[in-house]
Length: 324
Image 1 (cartoon, one colour):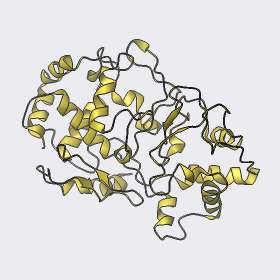
Image 2: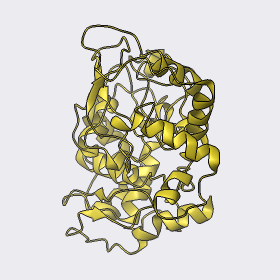
Image 3: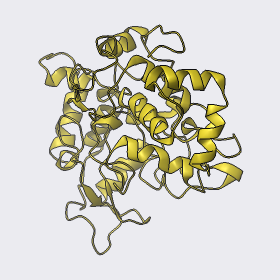
């Protein structure tokens, strides 16, 4: 684990604190595309560490009971082990929290794609009444009164605590949550023995008989589009999720209605829930028992990363609290 995170975050050590011209992270784990970084929010080690602290801090919620990690727990695939999350005062959310593994590669955020950048996404759960229910002005005052936070924001941004800077730090941290170097990634990059025979058969089912690859396109395992797969919650069309380390993220679907990966395979094998507007590719697959077993093995083991991010402080970087 330490070796993986050292490799993954070595790129941060090479970035100067004024790397405003850098708009891509190209030195990413084997198997991933580059990660776009907005010109106005360059990644620095200090900013990542500040974002990590904010992400796990319950001070971001009104009653100090909920953090970002309450719904995106690294122990559960950066999601939760329940269909819906509870926010302040026990209020129940309306959708299963999506995993944020490799979220820096997404073209849009939330299941419905309503946010286009991580900076835009970051503040919405904080203000959402069901989730963290925190006023942004009050949050600025709360964090500014914390001497350590005040010093960190000054060191990283050369300024005081603002909602925009909170969003920028959270986004910088989340862009580093990269998982890849799965057996599938290694195989695609020329390591012929990376996948065993059953994984290879499962991969073949995934990209042929089961038609998974129509939406979960080869490299990033998502087409970044929106599809109706028959799940009851609105909106009916939801963003195609990425799949690396999905064995960690149960339950599945945007309503958390499928408890296991086996349930997912069976759901798609029967063609989902038939209704008006269902994606035309949702049809009975009639997979054999062996094909289902091979597909499950590929989903579990073939997509298990060697660089799973554990969320520990600025992984791979030994920094003092106020390092820029």
